[in-house]
Length: 115
Image 1 (cartoon, one colour):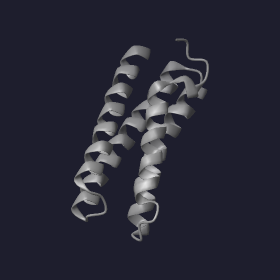
Image 2: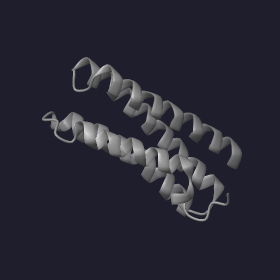
Image 3: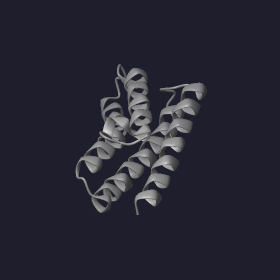
C-alpha cells in the first residue's frame, strides 16, 4: 500500500488508538500533572509521526520518528508509576504497555526502512 498521507501510516493509526485509550483511562484523574504528562507523551507519538511525514524528506521524517519513539518510552515509564499509584489495574497496564512496545518496534523498523 502506498502512503499518500500520514493517516495511511499504520504506526500513526496504532499511536492514535493508544492515545485514545490513555485519554479514556486517565481523563478524569485528579493528579493533573501526571494526567497531563502521560496524555502529552501519547499525543506526541502520533503527532511527531504526522509532522515528520509532512516534512517530505526521509532525513527529517527519521528525526521526528526518533522523537516519537522517545515518547513511547516516556509513556511506558509513566505506566509503571500509574500501576504503582493504582491509577490503573494490571490488565490496563499490560494493554497499554504492549501497545507502546509494538509501536516503538514498528517505528524502529520504519526508521531502518527510510534510512
